Length: 608
Ligand code: AGP
Image 1 (spheres, rainbow, N blue to C red):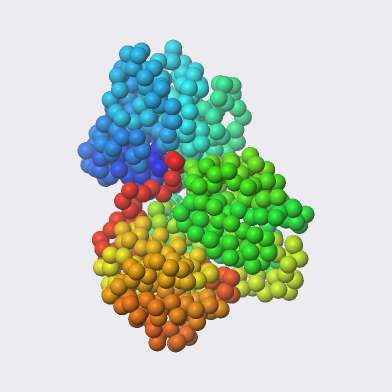
Image 2: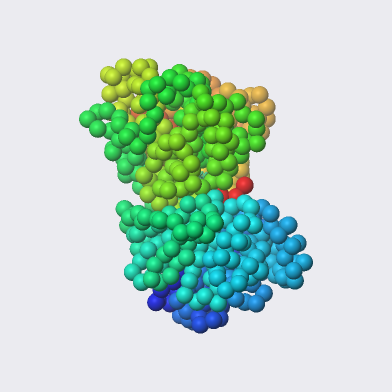
């Protein structure tokens, strides 16, 4: 949901801002802009196209002098995508420029107040109030003006600020939106995430909620929301720039699909020692688990679908009731949550606004919070009692693949670990499951190899306008993710249905040539699923099925089959999702869609 960058140093700012913005484009891409300060003049350039266009109109940034600047790539919330609404926003006197990620919830009140004072608004955005507030409060000290302005702002924000009166300082402030500071030699950076900094420095500083950073070439000073200095430490990033590049693939999504065996291995391996699961990163004890009478998994989108798989797995292993509650619903319900509830929060970015709100709601009611997060130091990680990081590396494609797979891996690890702590499974049973977990990366690799026929299947089926996914038990949970993957990147309408539920209404939509993707890998219910396949075939549907390798019975009904290797049925989702990701990818490619940046979407949904 919008990406922001900023630079101060000796080098020309504009090319550095462009590079950073290109790496953040996945966060939002309906317009973009930069503002660069040279002497005492702020120059802005904006476009409603991609960053490529900004490069074109500024000779790759060479046409804009100045070594201090800020940039923004937008996912519109307030005001349509247009040059007027694109950031940076500039004060009426041209002396202040601001980029913003988040939402200023009280902007209407502030706008009325500022209009009364004579400020003129040029855009429909919530952000513009910030720049006028700064101009209003500025009395010769930018940090003081930021402290005063921040006190007036409600909602979420990560802000990059420059001011022509103070040409040697870049200011950053955040509340509930991500912002990272990069510490170079004689130069400093701000960015919404590490990918935009990593080619310049691996030394970063995380700002806490409410903190304000005064960034100069000579160094960074951080203040709390009252303006008092705060001691901060730096962190070294342990991955390289290649992780944020396509490395020869046409799209990040395909690169990330292919990275899944490695990513799942990176999630599992460090936590399995001598055949035992060691979750040293969390402090949950057997006594804590015995205190739990209910588990609620909360998340959004694919992360919630990982949770749907987790529900089957954890209920089976722990015999504790598990619910999956969409974060956007949980936050506004009056949920039954207390100190006997374990809340499992799942989020790749760790910054999803609804998920953060659900976490707060549950925590306020006494739940213990365990989060499964990919981005280190993210808001959700910081707010949780315990965090398990997925260690997937940066995920750039808007459609998650390795993020989802590593979330599954953590759910399994936690399930087996907790089952042993609770005494629900013997040491021997757990050892067997751990071996099966260790085999997962290889099985994912086999699933990738087994499915090179999907290019042909995509060519055959990509023209379908409406597709149903059906399954039972874990197959059903996986069908939700398969359906979302397909619709978000190929724009084909699709729905995931519990196979047994179809006949209660939705089967009326099945007619000649309608494509039904039947997930038939959960063998305990295979015969039941076969009956459902027969029902849709009898009404003229074409059936593309998944099945465990060696299953020939499926061929008696299905038109085409995508095979996967055999796994422990509890861990089936990790392998079965692979052909569905590949199918979505190739269908989107055949339909000429923008795979990494699908329309209307953004990678990290930091607004409600
Ligand atoms: C998945 O492909 C989507 N882009 C989306 O559903 C995503 O999983 C969801 O927005 C949650 O994001 P998070 O994991 O960063 O919280």
